[in-house]
Image 1 (cartoon, rainbow, N blue to C red):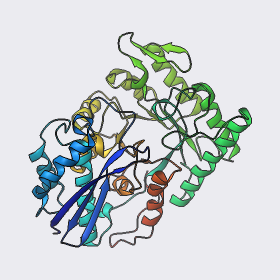
Image 2 (image 1 turned 90 degrees about the vertical axis):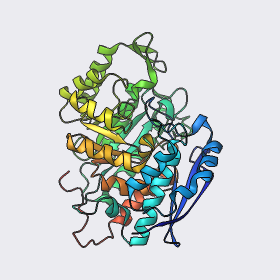
Image 3 (image 1 turned 180 degrees about the vertical axis):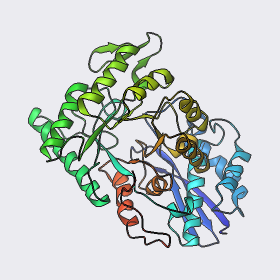
Image 4 (image 1 turned 60 degrees about the horizontal axis):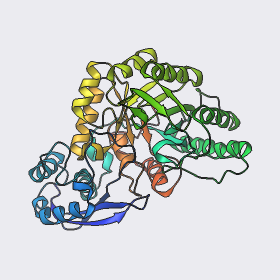
Amino acid sequence: MPSISSLNSRLIYDSRGSKALEIDVIADKKFLGRACAPSGASVGKHEAQSFPSNSPERALAIIKSNQNRFVGIDASNQIEIFDALRSIDNTETYSIIGGAAAYAISVASVEAASRALQIPLFRLLKPKGPYRYPYPLGNILGGGAHAGPGTPDIQEILACPVGARNVVEALEMNFRVHKEVRSVIEDLDPYFTYGRGDEGGWAPHVNNDHALEIAEIAVKNSGYSLGAEISLGVDFASSSYWNETKRIYDYKRQGLARNREEQIDYVNELIKKYNLIYVEDPVNEEDFEGASNITKENKRCIVTGDDMLVTNTSRAKFAAEHNACSGAILKVNQAGSLYEAMNFANTCSANGIKIITSHRSGESIDSHLSHIGIATDSKMLKAGIVGGERISKSNELVRITEYDLIDGMVDLFSAK
């Protein structure tokens, strides 16, 4: 098996211009694996912290002083990589080395191994098929932590091309709706400056209700039937405006507040009104009971935990026991290492919770996410629609269609 010959690290910059940690792993003295850790703006309090003491420089120094610990390890063996990481940092949230380091080292290692073994990364992570594409889930209109004042409180309105026959058609459907959203906003606001949020969704000066109306109109103007060809989703990111002291959801940008029961009713109403296929973090990250109520009420909607689950196996098990979620966001850097993230995915799948592999708001142009989405049999790949750091994931899905595997072609949205 391919052995790690050397490891090198550096600080570069992500899509927001913030410092990001990039790792190079060389296997068998010639096969390069490279990974840059992403970062989030909507961050759950239980997830791995990106950098020790919020210092990218400190993380870099620790890696450089410990890089020889990884030399000689089988680059394809996620357990060995995980054990080496934990020999440096055994804290729950990677407070010593940082989750960014755990992410970059583990992902760069398996990429180096896949190149040494001359197999695609998704096949290294999942040796046997069938291999199925996730539906691309794209941000078409946004607010919250991903956009500025005046935009909606809810973080993302998303498009999912459920009627697509293949990957290319799915991507083109998302592009078309994204462009049409801009046209609808232009008709409503002649002074719209084409502002976009961190993940490429349009960021207009509208409230939450008008934002959803715009998305619905754009889908219909694009020639699609809502719910049949294009379905909508909403990332509420509710923890970002949950006031623990007052016990209210404080929609400051819209100038209103909802208590717990009103928030649950509001989410249920939107799911029914717009036939939503997907809602993310509809209640705050500790309200498993509220999430369970929404999940039970909406069998056809994927009620998904992000801040609630933070790619943490223990929290996924707890959610399964309480039937709190029918979907789970998988963000590798929330867990830290790829090994921990894959364990999380396996736990969710074993409990009937669908996986949605996701980017972060601060991203790189890496495309590993597409392979991880396939390897985890993800229902959706949440990777944005436009912007170089987003389109890199979509373009990788197109490239993957060219693989003719010994054990069968990659299926196009089959058995989803």
